[in-house]
Amino acid sequence: MLILGIETTCDESACAIVRDGREILSNAVASQADLHEIYGGVVPELACRRHIDTLIPIIKEALEVANTTLQEIDLIAVAKGPGLIGALLIGLNTAKALAFSLDKPFIGINHIEAHIYAATMCHPEETLEFPCLGVVISGGHTSLVKIHALGEYELLAQTVDDAIGEAFDKVAAMLGFHYPGGPIIEKLAKKGDPLRFPFKAGRVKSNPLNFSFSGLKTNVLYTIKGPNSNKHSPCIIAEEEKKDVAASFQYTACQDLVKKTLQAARSFPCKGIFFGGGVSNNRYLRQLFEDSEIPCYWPTAELSLDNAAMIAGLAYHTYKKNPQGDALDLEASTRLPFASTL
Ligand code: KG4
Ligand code: ZN
Image (cartoon, rainbow, N blue to C red):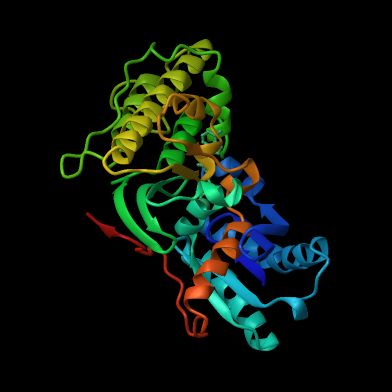
């Protein structure tokens, strides 16, 4: 089954052609990082305008690389949320228009669920055994999800404020670096002392597995710019101290993630931990999981960031369960619950 997937939840316009859930024939992505770089984060209105310009060319590119045509596609899949509403609508309406005009079935896919599925596409099929744990760590999400089967999820924990990638981006902006800050912080941290500044990650009383990074962010802000400063205040630390701030922040955020992830995984007979989202590219974080007694499965860089191969891949399984597909009045959803909270 040949599936065309579309992804426009945030700042990547992407289209991919995937056969039978795993075989990636093309995975075209137009990143908008250059556009948002100077703002320190994604500007929704600008993101939408860029999606309008890039989506059709990206769809053409995906078809060309896969050496196929729209007529040969069996199913049109699209990320229906969560994400920025304007951005979502562009992808969703494009997918609907394609499905309607070609008279092909159409299906909406949960972007977070797809991030988890992405890691499974990078490893032999047999590694996906249930129950297992999905860890989504991106610019928009920090979620620990118990996976009973594909399509059957239980949300064990999530962030109550900033996502982990967002915290990396904001700390980078405070230090004067551009968006996306994660890779810059990781690079800078290599030369720094992770124990120089005793930062603390937040604790959430109602669910100790939940994450909170806003306190840590303020901790870092006051270290860089002085007590009661704001993001516009000048830096009070020396240039050479920035690497220690980066290292101490990365150490604190990653240790918190490792501790809670392993605690969640050890709370049931977990067969494997599957990571997804941009932050799963962080090598320092991957090293911290090397001693885990539960096997850890990481996506390739291509499949860790927002992409459409994960949308088309997961759609294969979703469609098998729902061969009607979705109706063309399917709505986009900025917040899309896909699992119940314990
Ligand atoms: O999954 P993604 O492309 O988009 C969202 O769905 O948010 O993730 C982007 C996020 C950004 O916050 C970026 O700074 C972060 O992933 N990121 C990293 C690294 N590479 C990307 N964070 C830490 N270390 C990295 N190496
Ligand atoms: Zn994402």
